[in-house]
Amino acid sequence: MYKKLLLLCSMFVFIFSLSPISAFADDSTKQIELKTAVSTALSKNMDLSLLNERIDIAEDKSHEKTDDATEARNEKDLEDLKWELEDTKKNIEIETTRLYHQILILQKQVALKKDIIDTLNKEYVSKKKEIEVGRDVMSSLITCEMNISTAQSELIDLENERDNAIMDLNIEMGDDIDQKLVLSEENIPDETLDIKDINEIADKLPELSHSVMSIVEERKIVHEQYDDATEYQEDAYKDQLISLQYDIDDEKKNVELKVLSDYNDLLNSKDVLEAKRLDYEYDSKLSDASKVKYDNGLITILEYEKSNQNAESAQNAYLQSKLDYYIKLMNYKKFIEPALN
Picture: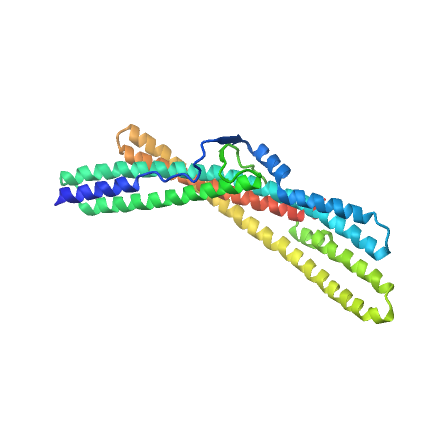
């Protein structure tokens, strides 16, 4: 009876230990570094091309001689497009950077998960031998099977997530979505935010934010039209002026709230990052201690491998937290930049 169960278990493990098929069947690869990925994305992005075309049209319109209000509106439209172009460039740079580092992290996670599955398979073989000689029970083998099944499922999820990130990066760079990529290793920068008084930023930015200034300029244009309006048109322009003033006040409040709420979110992310760093340090020390124990014959090779894998898992969690914090920081710096100058 035991031999039949062991045979079934062996077939189970064999099936779930098969490597999943990659989403990329093409053998061609493209080796890039982060700097190249960003420059490629900026040069080939369709949104930027469209914005440049719209800016050319807006510049032509801004040179047309018409009435003062129309000329002011044409000038405002041009400035709005120029701001959108620069903002889009920054967004592309941040997103390309995020995807690049995310892929590197996911590749590490995939490699680690494969190592974990390999260790679990070794543990399975060991337990099967223990059961054959009566030193272990079948329930421990079933637990091992479930661990292998769970790890294999997690591996498939990680590989799908990695492949999706690669496709997203290819799209960002204007390449075919199935283009295989070999990324050069890059460290996530250790960026910091030095703000002495966040309330001062919250007070200054609403007056300097483009979202507010654009509405202010729109109200100035409508006010010019109101000054030149006939008596019949005055009421309509008055309503527009009142509505735009409400929009200005609301947007100022939104900007102020975002300054404070995003700053708190950033501080929370920094706390999470520090906690992950401490976890990584702790698991690294346990791994070093396991090496000493293994060298002295106090633990098995499987126990040593698991300790190393715990340390690698903590490192990957730390890197993910570091990336999350870095991207939030870059977006926040971009947002409050007008108040820092």
